[in-house]
Image (cartoon, rainbow, N blue to C red; front, top):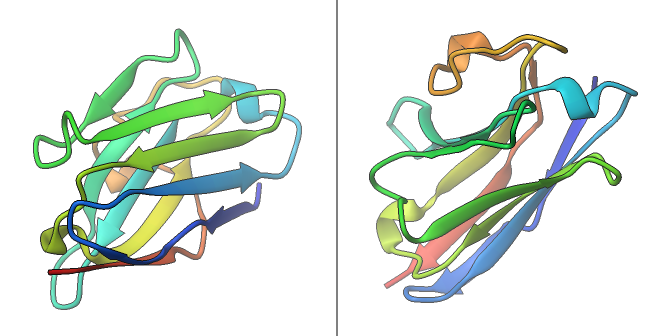
Length: 125
């Protein structure tokens, strides 16, 4: 499975961006998908996830109410809509995929089997 993240860029505080993550392979629809981010000097942290079974979404408290995660299984893509962006949202954002057919601990980076290269989001004040 290969993951390609895109959509990052430079935006002013209060603005919006939509990140996309396109997956290769035939088993996208049976994989939990997640987004993590890593700011300079910080550890990678959970942002949001969506399950393959039921499409249940989970969010970090820091982004709840501002970010929305969705998936389109026909396009093998997950979308992270980010609104009301803050300077503290600045980071490299990574998408990740779990193992096919398994429910994983979506908030833990160690649960994911595949990672994309990341896309940089910079929010200016």
